[in-house]
Amino acid sequence: MAFSDQFLDELRGRVGLIDVIGRRVKLTRRGREYLGLCPFHKEKTPSFTVNEEKGFYHCFGCQAHGSIFDFVMETEGLNFPEAVEKLAAETGMEVPRETPEARENQKQRQNLFDVTEIATTMFEKALRMPQGKEARDYLFQRGLSEETIRRFRLGFAPSGRHHLRTALARKGVDPKLAIAAGLLVEPDDGDPYDRFRNRVIFPICDRRGRVVAFGGRTLREGQPKYLNSPETPLFHKGQTLYGMHLAGPAARRAETMLVTEGYMDVIVLAQAGFEHTVAPLGTALTQDQIQLLWKVTREPILCFDGDNAGQRAATKAAKRALPHLRPGLGLRFAVLPTGEDPDTLVSRQGLGAMQTVLDAALPLSELLWRNETGGRIPSSAEDRAAIEYKLNEHTREIQDSIVRAHFSRVFGERLWPQQGASGHKHSQQRRSWSKRGAWAPNIHITPNETVPVKAASERHEELLLAVVINHPSAMDDVGEDLGTMRFSLPELDNARQEALKVFSDNPGLERSELITHLIRCGHGDVVNCVLGIEAYSFARSEAPLDQAVSGWKELFRRRQRQGLIEEIEEAKRASQENPSPEARARLDVLIKQKLRLDEEESASIACA
Image (cartoon, rainbow, N blue to C red):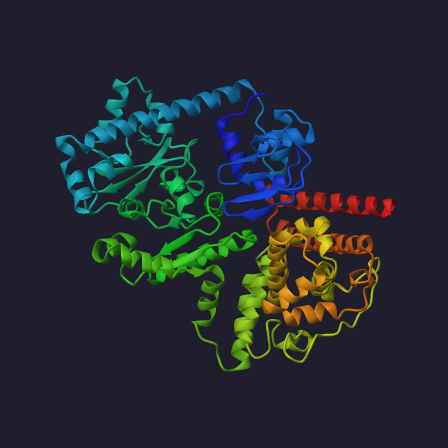
């Protein structure tokens, strides 16, 4: 079965390579890539890398290499069509069948690409003709160089209703094809005419650099300033970013992507050295466009004007991103001085002024905080409660439990600073890492007993760290899992990271040496707390190593299971509120992951 490039490109865009491989391989981020133990050969030192941006995996040990489709084929014993169908089912996409109609549609798409390329060349030539002088003058006045004009393939659509139609006819292009490409308009009287007339032309390309649509800026008063192509088989406005085909490589070098509001912003900034710049196409940033940005960079910067409209656009983008946030994926927001856009700021004040704006970009959480509080904390409890309610509304939109917990903690700590991150209502339940000494646990379980859900998360984290401190040699069995998690309390997580770091440098570290190192690094309160836990025999220093490892892995599975349960509940609510194929597919994937985890847990119990 053959699949169109369009379908495969869309499928790659919807399915995360990290998500698919992460089901079988425990991955840890290393710079732009992820690292784990190769699933295709036995190894103790991770040499298997995954590059989400470039869309492939590679093992430096056995040389295994391939795409997301290759991975599914190799790990599940499927052929290519079966792998495609499996991934499509997970995302709710319908697989197009190989039919005469499908083959005709693919041929039609290629014909449309041919037509848009012919039109682009014509617009480029028209810009350099005498009739294009006014358009050239406009571009030069905006500070664009000849090289920049050529790089972005800027052009000119002459006046007259039939200039392009006539030129295309000379090339043998059927008017119906030009209409389908969005180049001609077909009125009721049936006499097609040029859509773009007396306008500077901005070709819009897909990620592969193929022209799919056009934007046009008028050179006359009394007309809409900008005009875009309509939706076509090639062009879907909400799934395309202007300049993406040129910005991608630069964004990978800069490790960020800059998102502005218009064509000229992208072009002027790229010419000034900010080549990693893109823009949506006259609309607010969509979910699809945010996902497209995250394929390239973990934290793109959205640059908006400082006026009310710019603030509204920033808030809208932030809210749209909330349900899709994941650990390591976010947005930052750069706010320009009032009355400035990127183009004018660079022209008037230079690159330094623009860089200053970008350096001051706010994290998404900070933007929401400032929107709701105005940058200050009200004095009355009533006003604080009202703000807390609004912030909680934002937090509830976050589907990922880890990110949601961090947002809640950050907002709580700032809103009720005198009472801790859990908020004023929960302050009596919050642990203190102060000089009063280690907190004493008040519940007692064995590894086979259950823990109250409310207490489980933090308690489990303490136990996981206690096992590692008391049994450094357990790191051979649990180190990889420990490296993939993040503890909810910053103090615990900082100690976890320090332990991983020192183990990496000193694999044979003894218990006393590890404790001394952690205390010297400022983690003494955490060490005193976790080593003061006496209720769990497997975590004590005198426990046999195999018992310690077994207890650790049991808690790790419970932690995974609880996280999946929370995500499933969130996915159920999302599916009920918005019963889309994508929402249902996400719920199905989470349920399958939980079933697989339950099966593994049952198998481990049977073997015990």
